[in-house]
Length: 372
Image (tube, rainbow, N blue to C red; front, side, top):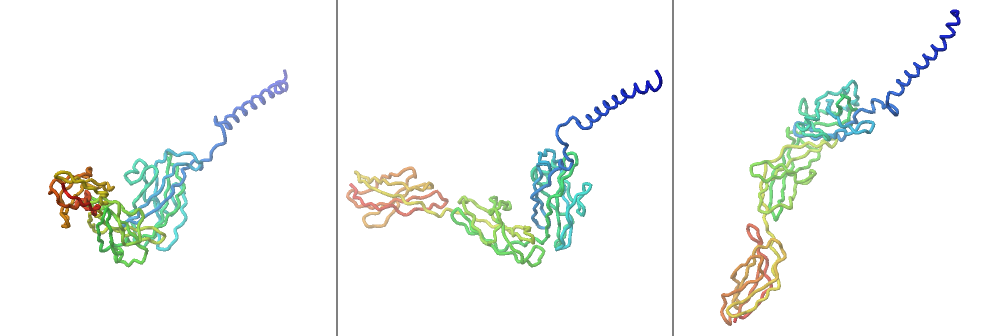
């Protein structure tokens, strides 16, 4: 066989092997062992944190936010590992620049905190919410812009959260002349607006107040009575337990530009003990039945649940009523054995409650009877 014949014989087989090789390679590249279209890497990034908000607590700015629970492609994210807080410091009234992420940094912002989710409890948050108290390098009168980024376990970062701008104003001073007046299951508190901010500067901003309550004699009141700060300088705390000592204090809340709230220090505490001053409903339908040597009384009980005793009053002829006995509230019958035959008597019954200083009801209907 000549050289040309051998070449013509080999060529078809070489071409066939090349076609097979390309087919196998193409299947490996295009198939990748997965079904469906590939997901773009940016769609797997964590979604941004939401609900970023702040309050001013004295010289500090307290930030709160909601951590992301999903990624940009909508799938659940269970490996959030860290949240970073970024801050930009500005002169008053200067608008902050847009927050853009580049190489893991937010351009133009300083990273002031990197909170690991396993350490979130130490910062006052949890896996769904975050909290950070910014105290370092703050200057009253300056403006601060904040954003938050979320990092997953592979180090991928979310885009910055929506920007929050806080104008750092001085906290308000302490409310003045706090007083309390106790009533029946209630305490009414009154106070005066602070004269100035905590730093002595004048305040023209809107002012609101939070009333704090406590029950331990040596502890500062910490439980807010009003869920939202009130603009009034008077508040009545109701549904209290009578004969229990309560302690109260008031904090002023300055509404800063942009609606951010600045909380001042609490006032000195005042004490108040509500007392039961409401008498029970009188007994009714009193009847008297004379018997030999005694008078039997019966009545319809007072409907009030706090009745402890019934008191029986007797008068001889047209004389004054004198208490002649009491009986427990479970009883609605009383037998008066200290009577004189043929003497004329008048009777009434009252109800007394369980207050420390018992309240006595009005009198029942009056009955007249002649002893036998």
